[in-house]
Length: 249
Image (cartoon, rainbow, N blue to C red; front, side, top):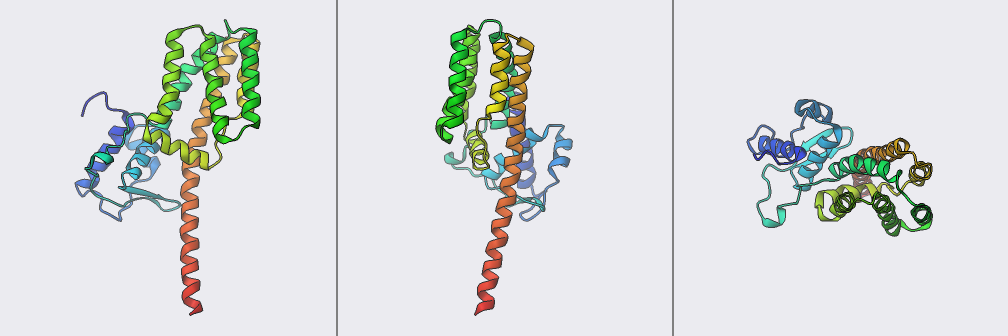
C-alpha cells in the first residue's frame, strides 16, 4: 500500500482484509476500540474514523454496550462504493487545530479594529441564527481570522480545510451525526478567541483556538458514541413493541 495513504484508511483496509480473509466472520465481535487503538498504536479519533469508514461500507456495526460486530465480509466493488475516504472529520479538525491555532497567534499581531468588529458581529450571528446559517457564520468567523494574518498561503490553506467538510463523504457523515447530537458553534469558546485577539496576545489566541478545536474533537467522539446508544434504544423499543403485539393476540 502506498505510503501516502491516510492512517485511518490503512487501519480500515487492514481490518477489512482480515474480515475478507475469514479471520473475523459475520456475527463475530471485533476487539474493543481500546484494544484496536493499542494494537495499531493510534488515537481514539483515528480509530473511530476507521470504524465509521467500515460501517459506511456495510462491513461492521457498533452496538452500544456489546461492541463492534461484523455485518459484511466483502467490500463493495461498484464505483458508487468508492467512498472518498481520503480525508475525514477527525483529520480535518486535527489539521485545523494545528493551522488555525498558529493563524490566530499571527492574527493577534496584525488584526485591525475593523476585523475585530466583524468577529463581534459574527459571534452575534452564531448566537441567534438557526443551525445551517449558524454554521455559515462559524466558517466566516474562522476565515476572518485567517484573513487577519495578511498571509495568502494561510488564508488559502484554511479555506481549503473548511471546503473539505463538504467534499469528503466521510467527513460529511461524521459531522452530520454530530449535528444530530447537538453540535453547534460554541459562543463561549469563540468569545475567548476574540478576547485574546482584542488583547493582541498571540499566545492566548493560539491556546484559545486550540482549546476550542480540541473540544470539537471531544464532541465528535461523544456524538458518535451517543448515536450508538440511541440506535440500541430504538431497537430495544421496537422489540418490546413487537412482543407486546404478540402478547395481545
